[in-house]
Length: 253
Image: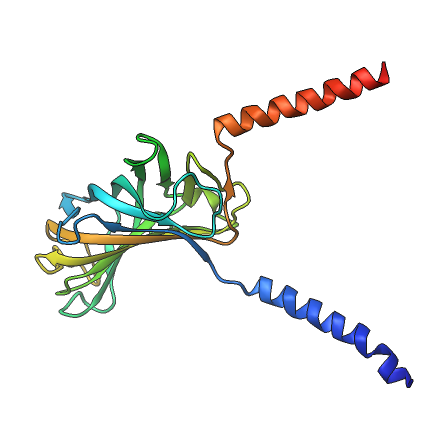
């Protein structure tokens, strides 16, 4: 056997390991939850500006589904009550001059959202979160986006390894302690009236409105969340560990 052939298996193994590592490093966000309105025709969202403050709010009955998280006490979509409330005092930015078709982005939102179980465990926190302005409101916090004259929009919040407090996720069933990147993204549709801005100064303005819209959303993280053991399971585990320790002590006696 030649020296080259002799080392081929080892070289192939190294290449495979490198490819696996590279694939993990380039892996994108993992969508672990998504929701839709129980009645798609209901306009659960409102965007309203009063003075120099804009509030984005939403509430209503929805259906939320989880994926990639085995062991949850429910299978398939779960009925829930959704609520969101966020406020920004930051002017929004237009792409050019806030004319028809121009893009619009308003950052600096702080607030909360929640999905409370209406199904197998009424009142439980299926998923909730807090978004915060962690530095300048012009560059941090959640953000509302739309286009002038358009009937759709979005509301987004995210956290990165260097700014974990910008979006904090919690749940009665899931732990996010290993997560270093998270995204909460809502898509708004059927906006009435079509989006417009208030008084424009240069390329900045607050939203006009108020506007009402329907919505849906997805939630992603860079590593799958861990399942929190149910209280009964946790108690049984504690009893088992205690019993094992007692048996070992008796054997030593």
